[in-house]
Length: 376
Image 1 (tube, one colour):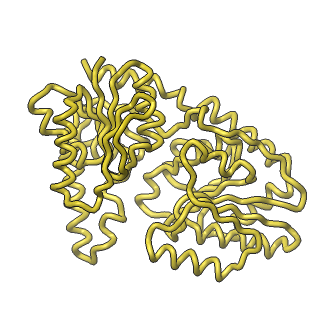
Image 2 (cartoon, rainbow, N blue to C red):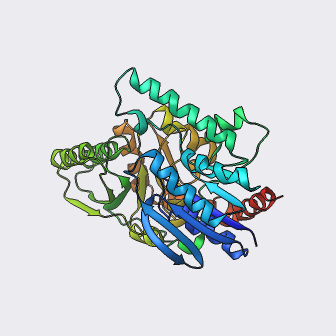
């Protein structure tokens, strides 16, 4: 059977999309699979999938490219599935020596704001243009595209419309889901936020809405579950400031869990939130945990993003909101509290929508067929 190599710089070797969905699906079809990452340290095999990964993100671009090129040379795959431009460019060398397909799995907005935020004007503009040209070069080298959502088609699907592509969202496999549809308890509510504790990701908007909620209903017992952490020092200071400002009584902070236990970690909450700020990049990036929340049977309150509107009918199991309108968001929570029937309807709808539209089995065969045809 053909040999398939996954190359990634920014994702771990056990990334949910790469390892738990794509690689495992291909392995079941009999393909030889190898995953190589520059974000985590592991060498060995897991579930029959070979892994050669190194935690070397601090190294120079030239050094990282050399590592990936050596891996490609040693494995000599028939297909390389790449998650970032550097991975695509690193696979170019063996493309000259062996006829192979390079599939660019476009799941990130590139260049992202975090790549240029360290530069002041006008250097940030210059670097943004540079990164954009690198993205175009990676698109030129690639033979096929997997695109995470429609809003990420630009620019490559427009500059290279003749290249074959497939839309492949981040739908979950049910074997990783803990379903727990709740019934609201009178006088109580448990609210959940997962991910980065940063201003950009909306932890401040989340706290602001809860503050209004407790002012409107001081007798209500509000419990808060936070799963995640701060990656940067400025985010840690921001989050610590929020805790001091609001002084919530019932706050539980948990570290990020493994992928297999993610839905277990928030099983007992009532509503899940994502209130990231509105900006151009966020509008084009679909917050993928919405599918896991739906699979778990959790109503959601999410920022009204273009990508979310295009891919998910949230009205069936939650609300899309202006993330900075804390007063209105607190009203959305009260709608559930005052109308338990609406909550129950949205909770059951969430699971139903997942089962019929947003699960891995819906798109698994289109992924496998796309990879199979890329060998022709």
